Image (tube, rainbow, N blue to C red; front, side, top):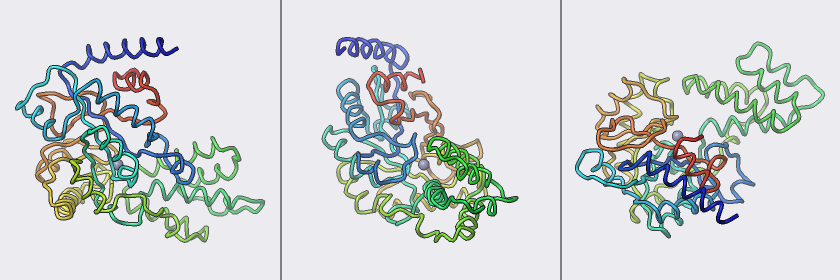
Length: 338
Ligand SMILES: [Zn+2]
């Protein structure tokens, strides 16, 4: 069994070398969770790896490839430095608290540098992304299901409410989760103020206090970010409100400027990199990012980077538990087999 896994890993590594020799693979993580986080919190699948999975991956990457700091990566993009083999850059989006509690100890232990993109408006605050709040709201609403026509009453003629209704009518977990997922995907198409209004209206009708939808301690504090900085972790911007920039063009410049200045003032560092919230951008957004003084911007399109890569559209591989919990799966994901 061990030999079979070893062989598979060896073959996949050969494939990886063949495909990406001389390139940098940028990994994109979000959350790194331990068992108690998974038991107690509301977590979106696709946005986390387990701590042991993360450690396995970091240790494998460290043992087999060169892991770059962000400044080394920038030198390669700018043709100031060249590498013959494959290199890696480790990145995280959003600035979750578990980046400090679970990821940082692993990074420190293996002496691996990383770049964390902060959603500046959430750092040091007891607040949560709307996605988590809507998921919590759906959970609370599910508990309210009963013989009365509560859901039918609130759903009549309202946008997106068919999912709320379906959640009440379906008792199995999977279909409930499917409807939460569909609801989140639909809401994502709207500007942030409309999403906030939807949450407010639904809370009003259901008699739920919107404040109770916020988790506590979801995001990093500035002190934790500063401590990580003192151990070589680097930071970039991920906007202020995490609004998808292509849906809010009038406020794009503010998002870019304010997030940069908040992080620079708090951490006393220069911010030169940006990560597009939800990975969404177009020419207008990329130009705005450049105009606001950022030198690099990271997307969520898969691929690898090297000299000549557009610095405003750096590809990344999204790493999450479902698809990468063994090293062969991790390598398949990077190669692009799934
Ligand atoms: Zn994000």
